[in-house]
Image: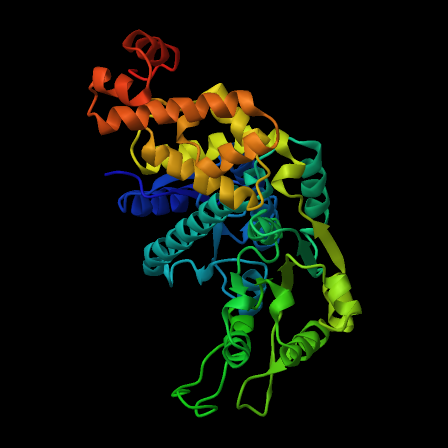
Length: 450
């Protein structure tokens, strides 16, 4: 039978250890034995796969209950079941308070050992699974997932890592498409006290005032037409975790006042309710506006601005970190090549040059879209400059960098004519107004046949 889990029995009575070992072993568990607490602790330190410890209370070198915390420190996933020949309510309560999974009296409750072990091992599996999922989320959404080696982005990440473990409100400033939500997620998953709870994101510009109020704070049944049942708001959904308020500058003035109260008291009143609701939420807000100027001009509450800007992080635009463009482009290339099941492994020099010389007003989001489009159109193993949209090439021309762009335009034009003529090179040369020999030279030069 395949072993379900590994159980450590700590008891100084050898016959009892052997009996328990036989009973537990027949259930498919792997069993390890120790005759003292010192020996048991040594096994736990050396054997990282101990799932459950079944320990006696009175042992030659100490009290099993008093070792619970030490065992948990060595192996946080391990569950501990305490057994004693002389049951007492005091010992049972103390054991459970210190983190024991269960407590029972030897002899009287022997038939409870296997069911207790089954429950304990299920709990261990659950804890390990949650830990694995949290690690995957941290890896997926953590600061390590923010791509770039430029000094600019590294400095911003360093600042963000400093504030992440705290409960301080953070205001992320930056243009549209720079990755503000990615930073908000990284702040959440780098906070060990909050990452086990929800990360909830809402775009404040996506809702009308009344709808946004209900979305954020929830409502009571009958609060307005269509409110057919009580509903939790996003603040309640995010309690214990993080609420990301994107485009905070678009929030209505009335809601700004209500948000300020939540930030100051962690309480609010649902739409249609008369009682306060208490939450524990960390706020991360984001804006592409200059909120300081907006507050000075009266378009945004100054008291809310100063409350939100407890800790400000300015995320740079892509044109401020152009040395990161190639790494980001390769990242998106790998994503879309896998997604579209294409074997595209590189980008040619002209393709990269055009990307680096573009201004990227749409920032990383625009770059992502360009790479996705290029991968869809690509029919070779490398992305080439003819896959770049005309607006980027025209931008290259207007900036005075004509060599690469003219090459790309000529190559693109030849390809279009060949498509029109269905590969007939003689007809293509006529339409292009060049000799057939020149066309063949161009095909070779641009590697169009390949």
